Image 1 (cartoon, rainbow, N blue to C red):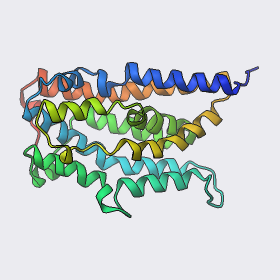
Image 2 (cartoon, rainbow, N blue to C red):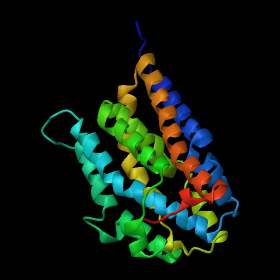
Image 3 (cartoon, rainbow, N blue to C red):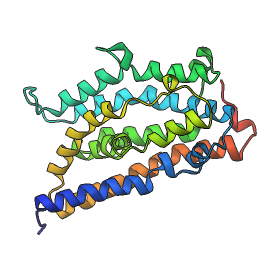
Image 4 (cartoon, helix red, strand yellow):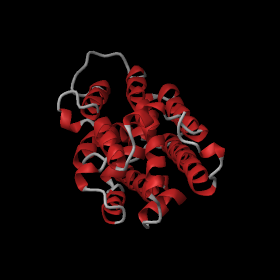
Length: 249
């Protein structure tokens, strides 16, 4: 028999998940990220990151479509998670407000650090980046939507809510001379607005000890998937300068 969590216990659970992100997420704790944050990367290294992150962004809209497809069939209302996913995607793709377009914002960053549009179009992802995208897609397609949200949104988009993207922006500005208007990360306030309803839905799901254990397992899996991306990037751009590190088709 599983026990049901009280409101206080759910709040403590949420706090512990946030702390896991702070302490373990590869976005700041990978070897590659630590080099970025300490100003030890070259402009070429930034370009190599951009060429891989390009392929994450290309795949990202599919995640929301998969999340939505796994939600219950109801008449859409303000509590329908599919509406939340749709609004998130509309913001990310700049459908309503073009200046919010995350993808064009990222391309502008790429152009500023010296990449050309044809290089981005012809780029071939590393095997590790392919594995990373496949891992995220597996979670989006095959988990119950509450668990998939925990993986793809809480464990990732909370990087903004927890202010863990700020060290990246500070390093890019101060260590690498990137103007603030050329940074590729979206505003914290925008992402916080997206992630808060998701956190609420996950907590409504994770009221039993069994469900909470499952969410913790999913967080660990999500961190491991992000490690595949950053460790592959580190190995092929820092450790290895052979033929396997060629960036273009």
